[in-house]
Image (cartoon, rainbow, N blue to C red; front, side):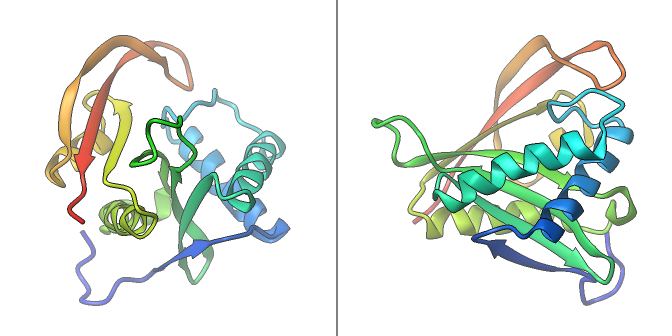
Length: 179
């Protein structure tokens, strides 16, 4: 946890992404995969492949299908989280929380918690009352979500292939948001 009284980052929602922001987000994603995070990509993840992913996210953000929150420090974007807002016709009340990423230089400073709380506020602002997510069972993120009051639904064994190989279980969580 950050021992100073004031965080060393700021959070903001991006409604469109510039090429520079895509480049910074690609750097965060590459760093997380290099650090062993199971976030849909295998190691080694090239910067270009990561940037291509973020260009796709940018299209979803521009179309209003995704909401993107970023954390920035003096070096640039150091964390991010997304809400997948586009859901089936019978699910306008919910969003999927996805790609909560914190650069390794910012770990253990409270940024993950700040991103999660920011995502919950953003979801409320977008009219959502239910969030769902999945994460690697037993991971740091798994413990964070539980500590923040997310409800554990269950575990799916051997669900995720880790960036350097090996299967791991995934835990599904949900969070009901007070209006």
